Picture (tube, rainbow, N blue to C red):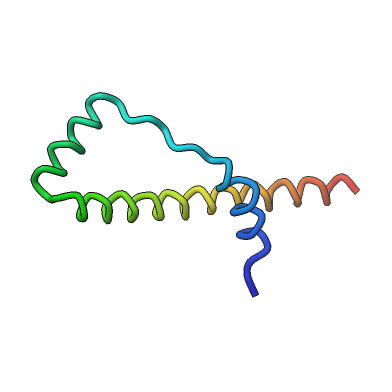
Amino acid sequence: MQDPLRKIYELVYEANAAGHPMTAEEAAVWDRAQRVLGSEMIDRLVYSQSRSLTEEQYDSFRAGFRLGAQLMLSLR
């Protein structure tokens, strides 16, 4: 069974989350790295980083959701 919070996160938050645009400095670094490492390796790095960030964001979402639930229960 899939984690219900994970499903909520994927349906509501992750679908609407937008990445931040690269600064000129970041773009220059990625361009240089792509020339040295190649497009395939850069794609793998970007994918790996995005998965790591997604997991970190999900952990924060889960903690916030649980805190909100606890606060609502304490109001009863």
